[in-house]
Each structure stands twice: as structure tokens, then as C-alpha cells.
Amino acid sequence: MSGDTLKPVLEAIDSRRDELFALLSRLVSFETPAPPARNTTGVQTFVAGELKALGFDIDMWDVHPGDPNVVGTLKGTAGDRMKSLILNGHVDVAEISPDEAWETGPFRPFIRDGRICGRGVADMKGGIAGALFAVKLLKEAGLGFGGDLIFESVIGEEVGEAGTLQCCKRGYTADFALVVDTTDLAIQGQGGVITGWITVRSPQTFHDGTRRDMIHAGGGLKGASAIEKMMKIIAGLNELERHWAVMKSYPGCPLGSTTINPAVIEGGRHAAFIADECRLWVTVHYYPNEHHDTVVQEIETHLKAVAAADPWLRDNPPTFRWGGTSMIIDRGEVFPALEVDPDHPAVKLLGAGHAATFGAQPPITVSPSVTDGGWMGDAGIPAAIYGPGELSQAHSVNESLSLDQLVDYTKVMARFIHGWLNTPR
Ligand SMILES: [Zn+2]
Image (cartoon, rainbow, N blue to C red; front, top):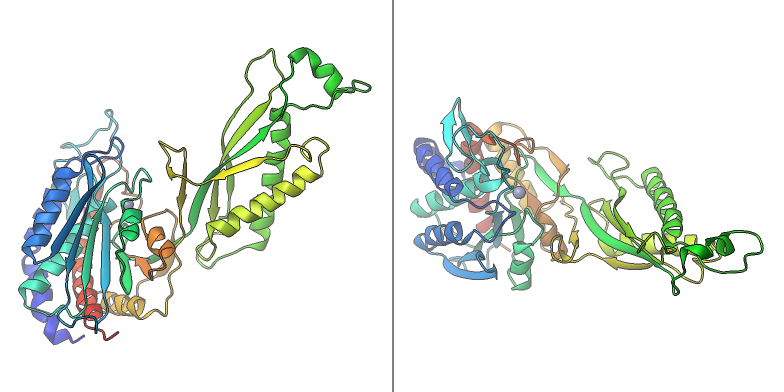
């Protein structure tokens, strides 16, 4: 990557910054909060139009009615001799509640004191605008795109409906993927999250009047309250959580980040019965270098041992249901982890592009949140998250983004996109 080749593009990003801000304002003006979702056809049609004008082939399909994904593909000029790249961003934004005091309304962005304000500027229409504008100015400067460039504009990130998963399942892959979500210009991976249901069930249903016979000397009735047995299960989860905190660690993550939250409990049928069923919904966090299958295995193994030490649970062990595809429909979800390899050539190139713009290497850290980057990790595509905006702004009232940061981000993206797509495979 030569500085001279890119000089006109970098200068144009400065001199045409108002166009970049207008592009971001336009994206924000589409009202795409999720929930309620099912409202992204307008913005996605707009993005598809922008990509088409730049020569991309467009693949647009409804993930849910009213929520289409858009994937643009720009075939490289060097066939498959140069590295390919996926750029990925979500167009849905965090929900708005009616009592929020926005200065001009969340979807009527305005600029003041060097910042642009509106829902989604930080999370993450700013990242999409920067990436799109970088591609546009590279294209206009006639700079060759050696490898294939795939631009994924997806839905459903905020509500865990995973438009990105659909892109992966549809077969979109590349030598590297960059998710342009909110990182305040750090290069980030992420830990994973999986939710699951643990159920304790009695094969028989007993009347409340049998409790004496069930719990006291000489009663002779082998039975149990599923709610009380669930207390043992929860105590077991607490022990495992503490054991993980003592034994596991990952650079950049606070110790003890591997939490098991007993988030929701349901059980019993009526005050006239012994509770014959109890269900616990748990949320489990794990480190970037762990896989949800292994984590789930550790929990099940531990709880089976807890059950084996109890005379009733031994015969009636808990059952498990992990993951799902929607927190709303299935009441279950997995957000896979993403581990960033600091020695991957694309990560090094991105770091170099950042250093050329800011005079210092970007931090490589772990996002405290979960993004679509996890789906890239899950699909085996080397990836990282790198985008403008602060996480404290994401989801906040009067969400704002520094304009200078957006301009600088766009320059880093121009350097990176051009450099990676012209790297021999
Ligand atoms: Zn986001």
C-alpha cells in the first residue's frame, strides 16, 4: 500500500466530508428501531441503490417480512489471486421509548459542536456510512479492487435475529471479515453468550396434603418439590460459576467474566399441589477462546454430578435445552464468541492503516458487548470488529458521534480496503 496512490482519496475524504455526513444523516432518517423491527425495507433499498451505483451485484432477500438483508458483491479485477473481504454492518438500531427527550427527534439528525446526533450514529450507521464512503471514493479514484469485496448490510442485530447468520448460511465467505460496529476505533473480538433452559420435573403430581409424608420421618413417600430441587441446581451453578472465575481467564477480560445468571424462573401449578415442574432460564457468558458447545458440556456434567448426589434428583435428573434463534420467539439464543488473532495479516494491515492515520497502533481488546462478529467466528471466517463511536453512546438518548472520528475512520477504512484487496492470496 503506497501512501502516494491513496493520497487523492484521503484528501477527498477531507474535502468532501459534508457528503459523508449527509450520507450518515440519510441513513439515520430511516426509522429502523428494533424492536419493533420489520421496518428496514426502506433503508435497505437505499443501501442497495448506493452499492448498485458503485457496480456491486445485489442480493436482497427478506429474512423476515419487512426486514431484508442486502449483500453487494464487487468482483475483483484479479480473479481470485488477491484477498477477499467482507464488510458487515447492521441497519437496525436500538429501540426508542416514547418518554425519551430527544432534542429534534431520534430520526432527525443534527450537527453541533463537532458531533452528529441521532439514533444509530454510533451503533452503527456511522460505521456503515464510513465504510460505504471509503469504497465510493476508492472506486471514483479508479483504484483497482484486486480481490472480491462483499458488503453485507444486515438486519436483526439488536434483537438477536441474526441477519448475519443468514448471510453465512447463504454461503458468503471471504479471507477476512470486518464488522464495522461500535468500538471507538479499537480492534475487538468478543466473548460469547448462550442462554438455556434447565428443567426439573417430577414424574408424578402430588397434592399439597402429601407434603408431610414426603419430607418427614416415617412418611414413606418418595417425592419432591421441583422448586426446592431447583434450589440445589442453582447452588450448583453458583459453585461452577465461582470455579470458573478462579480457574479461567482471558487477556483483556475482567476476571470472573464467565458468569452464569439465573435470569428467569417458572414453576409450580397451584398452591394446592406440590410443584411438579420448575424451569430456569440461564444466561451464560464465556471467553473469546471458548466454544458454546464445550461450555454447555461443562454445565451439564457438573449438574449431573449435583443430581447424582441427591436421592431424588438421581432418579429425576434435570433436562436441558440450549440456544435458539430468537429471544422473542424461541426464548433462547446463542451469540458466538470471536477471537481476534493479532498476527493475522488483515489485523496487522488494519493496525497499520490506523497507525498511519493516528500515529499510534490501535488497542486490540475484547468488546464487553456481543455483535455480529460472533457469527463470523462461528462460520470460521477470520474477523474483527472495528468501528467509530463510543459504546456509552450506543442505545443512549441523544446518541452522538464525533465527526472528526468518523472522517478519520473513513480514511483508515480506505487504506485497509485498498490494501487488503490488493494483497496476494
Ligand atoms: Zn450494533
